[in-house]
Length: 380
Ligand code: BJ8
Image: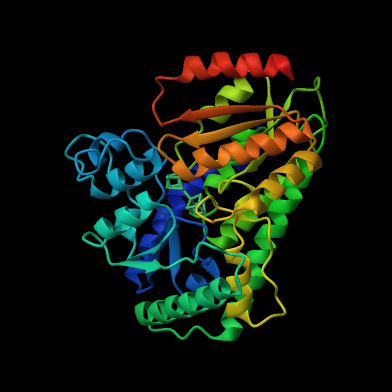
């Protein structure tokens, strides 16, 4: 696969971003930490604050978290919590993101996250957005609008800035621009052979809630022009969709295995994939209502029913001409684990093969997953 210079630049962008947020904070700008797509960035930026993603994708902080939390909960929660409570004494590097936020903005999604947020409040003030979980009812939307109104008030209090409709509209337009750039990039992945690997794509998606919107757009524009100029080469490789749990920074295990075994990931139905940018916010509506309408429709497995997700998977499989789906879940993520059943039934009906991979952040199962992926590829 082609090496893209814009992806190389991402490494230095990381260090620059850490300096940027530190400087901003020294000059009085507030910064918040988030863990989930349900928190609208537009409200944070309209209040004049910055934001950093705090989701953990690294294995080395899990043993630290296990001194406080049960072992049998999802690795994403343990990794995140371990980074936050890590004091560096165990030799594991502390998380620089966490020490750079004035407030955590959390959301009531799965049980593990909800309970972690109660504990996080002991470390950093933690604001929780309550999320209605039956999204298709009119009451849910009304309730979510009031929750987002309360969140806007909390941001105004934190920053001392008024969140006006005009500021919100500007941020909605800016976020929609980012979403359109990501759509353009995904459009290029529809080519056969795909000009960019899934691992490379994941690396940029993992940075989308870390970089500032301006930097992200700049990187995306550079990457799009590089990818556009790549001449398709090589034979057809099995086109794979990954569907399921997110893969935060530090976690590229399963995509690496799939692409080492000869497949190419052409689309991800996950929060480090299409769920993060697929739908636009309506720029013509009253901004808080438009935000509530867009965000409540994110097809996360904490929603019930969540048939929108099944429809999305089938549509993406068709549009990206996928040969097979790797359904990826983290251990103890009950929502995505249970939803596998419905997804499997729908894919079977559509004649699309599916491989189920349940894993954690350790490398102990790399070989075993590799053997199963190998056998899956042969079938396609
Ligand atoms: S919108 S997927 S980012 S909640 S993997 S912690 S669900 S037990 S991350 Fe998520 Fe928001 Fe939903 Fe997306 Fe819980 Fe599952 Fe762990 Fe998860």
